[in-house]
Image (tube, rainbow, N blue to C red; front, side):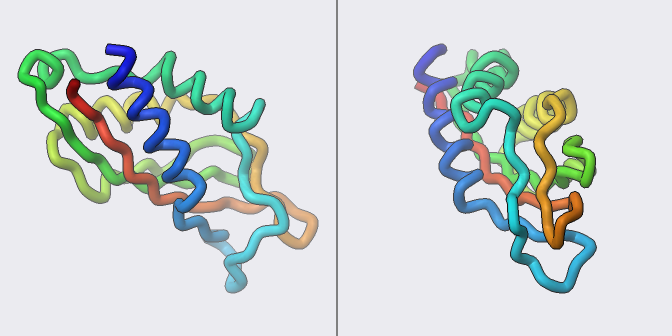
Length: 129
């Protein structure tokens, strides 16, 4: 089980580094400060490890899968508007959406001295071992 979670964490952290992010209310898409998970990358990795699980039914069938989600970190730092863009299995999509909706508040992005909403697109892999 630990190998599955660690693989997911690595994929997720790499994806955040390359995620497409845009201020959804501004013409210029460059933020002075991107949203940050409180506590940084290690805290994000810990949160993922403790909160996102490999769906039990898929685990029994040794199924791997990929889900691409988009979501907004709003101007108050809350995760909002989670959308499944692509999914190899509805169980993976449901798990990811349910858990992301429980994610704690982030430090919001700042542009031109004010908090702004930023949209992320995140590919996330569930790996069977």
